[in-house]
Length: 218
Ligand SMILES: C[S@@+](CC[C@H](N)C(=O)[O-])C[C@H]1O[C@@H](n2cnc3c(N)ncnc32)[C@H](O)[C@@H]1O
Image (tube, rainbow, N blue to C red; front, side):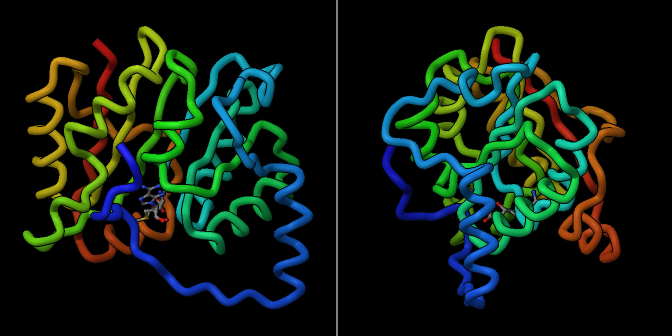
């Protein structure tokens, strides 16, 4: 599966000042990965008890909180939005976090080319873009080919945790997973470990209902 024509993210302009560019470059040395082949993830997280991949860290405020509260876990963040990556690196650096690495690329390509089978304990997918219009539903990241892509990468007993504030996307997620033999599981209570991100906060203020799911690899 190559980078889909129907990208699951919006292309957003990002103009950075020279100072921001310099700060970004300095922190990229510390947190960034520029893969050239299949990665040995444990080499990036030698002291971690488990490795969690987070797809779509946005502006990073929830992710930075989770990462700093769980220093025994190595977090691999996948994001395409450069300013968001910069914000996450700044927060992680301020928190003194060393258990974070970041790849700046479409998660589909990352999974396809650089992640070894049975190498991550879990995947976090928090508030993926809901693409509410009918003509855009093919851009939703949760689709059967995505499940086929992630299942081999997750270790036995591992899972994907998804949260959405879009009720119709929650039904879609249920249906896609129900139709697949690769995972089992379903809705769970909101976990205490997940802080409210700016994105989730906006949804809550609009009266949206948040649904959390955990699907285990079968
Ligand atoms: C709606 S935002 C939510 C961000 C964050 N998880 C939160 O709760 O605030 C979705 C994020 O996923 C990223 N994203 C969407 N599709 C992606 C993909 N295929 N690969 C990497 N990042 C992606 C977008 O750039 C965006 O920052």
